[in-house]
Structure formats: C-alpha cells, structure tokens
Image (tube, rainbow, N blue to C red; front, side, top):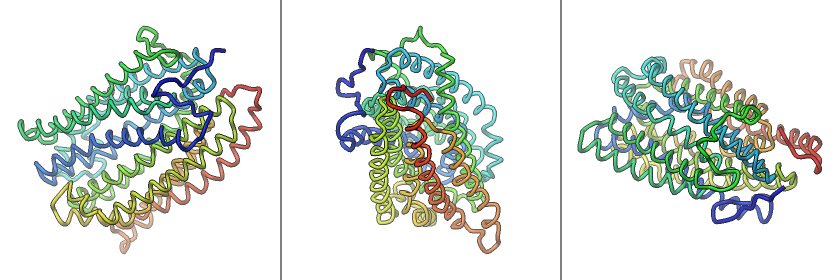
Length: 463
C-alpha cells in the first residue's frame, strides 16, 4: 500500500512527533477561520445596530437560534465526513479517501438545496412559533428568507473544509474565509449606507460572501492531488461511504439539531421579556460565540487527531491527544471568559449605545460567558468519542444532559413566578455543561477500552 505523505505546508501527519505543537498548528488557523466565519453574522448585527437601530439588531439576532436549528443537522453530517476521511488518510488508503470525498461533496449539494426550500417556505411561521416580537417579525422574516438563498454554498463550504481538516489543512480555509469575511463587511456597509437596504442589505452581503467561500474551497479540492482531489465527473454517492458517514454524522446532526431546538425554546423564553432584552441577549450571545468557536477549534482538533491515530491504531496517542485537547480548551475558555468579565461593556458598545441593552448583555456574561470553558470541556470529550468512531453515545448523553435538562428547567423552575426572570434561563447553561461533561468522561473511559479490545494492532478499524 502506498504511503500517503503529509507533505507541503498544509497537511499534518498527526500520528507521529510531538502532539501539542501539531495540535496548535492545526487549531490556531481553524480558530481564526471560525472567528472569521462568525464575523459574517456579527458584521450583520454591528452594521444594522450602528446605522439602523436596535430593532434591526433584534431582527437579525433573533434568527441565530433558528438558523442553527435548520443547518446543524447537515453540519453534523460533515463531522462524519471529517472522521472517515481522516481515518483513511491516517491509514494511507487513497481509494476509500477519494470515494469519501466525492460522496461527501454530493451530499453537501443535496443538503443545501433541501435546506433552501425548507427555509424559504417556513421562515415566517417558525419565527412566529418562537414568539418573535411583532415589531421585529417582518424584518426578521425578510432577513431569514434571503439568508437561506445562500445555504447551499454554506453546506458545500462546511463539507469541503471538513475534508481539508481531515488531512490537517486548516490554513487554506482560513485564507478563504478572510477573503469572504472582508467582502461581507464591505458589502454590508455598501448595501446599508448607499442603498439603505437595512436587514435585506446585510442578508444579501452574507449570501454573496458564502458563495465566495464555497467557490474557493471547491477550487482548492479540485487542484489537490491523491485521494483528497475532487473531480466533478466522479461525484457519486458510494453506498458504503454514505452509510459510514451517516453512522458517525447522523447522531452528531441529530444532536446539533435538538441542541438548537432547546436553544429555540430558550430564545422563545427570552423573547417574552421584550425587544431590549432580545437585543441585549443577541449581542452578548454573538460575542460569546467568539469564545465558543475559539474553543471549538480544539474540539475539531481532537476529532482529527483521534481519527488519524485510530487509522494507524496508535491508542496511547489517542489518549494523549484528548488530554492535551482538554488542557488547551480549558486555558482558552478561562482566558476569554476573563476578557468578557473585564471588557464586557466595551465589547457590548461595539454593537449598541443603548444603556439598557448593554446591561442585559453584561448580565448574560456574568452567568454564561464567564464559565464558558465548561462547554469547551464538554465538547472536547465529545470530539474524542466521535474520533474513535462512537457518535450515538455522546448524542444520547448530550441530549439528556444539555438539551432535555434545559427544557425541563424552563418548563419547571422558570415557570415558578418568583423565578420567572431572564437570569433563571441563563443558569440552565452551566448546570447542563457540568452534568453532561461528567457523563461524557465516564463514557470515553469505557468505550476507549472497548476500542482497544475490538481492534488489535493487526486489524484495520472499520467502524
């Protein structure tokens, strides 16, 4: 079997050498890339907040939970793509890697078209179900309908970048998102200031930037060599690869969707307190999103490192990769949480100058943002489980601990009159993170032992 070399400046062989430097080399560009991707929506909120007003901020911000609900299922499927491709890359298997690439990219197109159709026909009604304030509903619907015109480009980019991450390439997705991110900001200002298009303008700018990033990542894959190379005429659903992607990605997708569903319920609860609270919560959640994606880079790193090493059957290295990932995510979350506490007012001031809105955001930081590292620990443990081929177990644990628990909290504690305040909603986050992370840790210990028994050194793992 011909060895796949991690050659050039982009690919990373995660199966040999010191782990921490390679994990940082993988995670830091991915972190920057994720931050730029988050700037798409942040730029929308900042521009409408500064040039249009807080009600426009609420219109854009109130869509976040719903957009995640409708897209996270297919983003979860891309986790299956990442795990499978990394395993074949680690095992030096060109043929199966190529089949994974072409199956994945065709899935991305089909998924995106489906999401666009669903989004266009259901946007308004879904926002009504979420108790979106009446004075915000029309603008929010307009933004959402335009946003979904670019969803196919988003799914193509997510699947394409998942394939690149599988071979350790997190630099080029960063370059592409930098280009599209700058384009998004420029077009936001152009459409809002010059054409006075408010939420429609920022939505159109987002769609154009999404298309740009998708085109660039597809072009990158088409110019690659070896099993990772994309050839349009080879696009085909290979049944065995589809089933393996679904086996790993479907639970991740279901988890992401139901997680988002719980966030929609939480958003609906927050919507009950009026547009100032909606706006302040949206601004603060957007800022916290930067902390989340910084930590999420190490979750992605753990998936790729454990997957490649499972392909090579380096079990000790799998364990060490997870522990290093947990250390990195904790340090990142703690440091950025301190930034939210000490510079929260200045950060909120980027989004709005309304004092009551700023105070709402600062209150959320105190309850959620300051201890966000707990969420990072929870996610890293999930990454370790998915990397060794187990996706159903973390799905069940996450849904019970971080989804069902929150919904029960809202249905019970939040509905007690003296606790019917927004702070009660915020408290549900850290409680769910602690419970879920603890159970994930126990699951990893148990399932990792099973993997070592099931796949002795002479057997190539095929979950």
